[in-house]
Image (cartoon, rainbow over the protein chains, first blue to last red):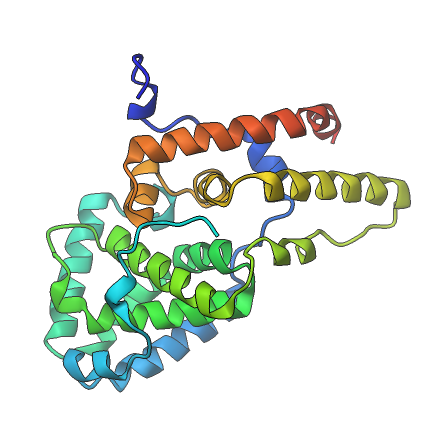
Length: 72
Length: 195
């Protein structure tokens, strides 16, 4: 922590970085893709059999979801 | 912040808490507005982490179902977004491990299409290559934090909750990442100003 409290608040946006990095970044999810994805999610949700049952159906193990970050 | 435009944070918390209540009571349709609200930012997080659209979409679907399955553990007095993004993030790390891919690889395919001006295209390609190179040289944590903050509009606190880091630590990584990028990209500021 710096003595001037610089890490206590978010910095202002950097327009140069935003413009440069934005050039090679993924564009937002297209409207039709978002609609398709939302429909797929809601289709699964409508079969929602109750959280305990659904939890058992979801693949994967949540036990490491709170693992500390590790650099690859 | 920009990810939940159209309502203030208190409104969001109240609306999400009411929706969660209805979902837990068996009204599946009440989940739809939440999916709509958090879909794009969740996709952005997934893309930053996994580096391609299909995996990001798969992750978003899985994360919403995971959130649904764990909805009873959600504290309705708190915002839904950070809790949900944490799920996206942790599931994304797990998915990435299983996919054994490097997140930076697909950035190569995200360049803008060419135009009728070959000289201008060549200049843009050089710029894109430089930006990609500068990003790729950052430690991954710095790169992801810069992208989540400067491009996707997440706050330091939100990123901190997502990554399990203190917000001050997030800002420090942001500072380091920005400084490294500025040094590499400063020569292009003049070219950008002329556009």
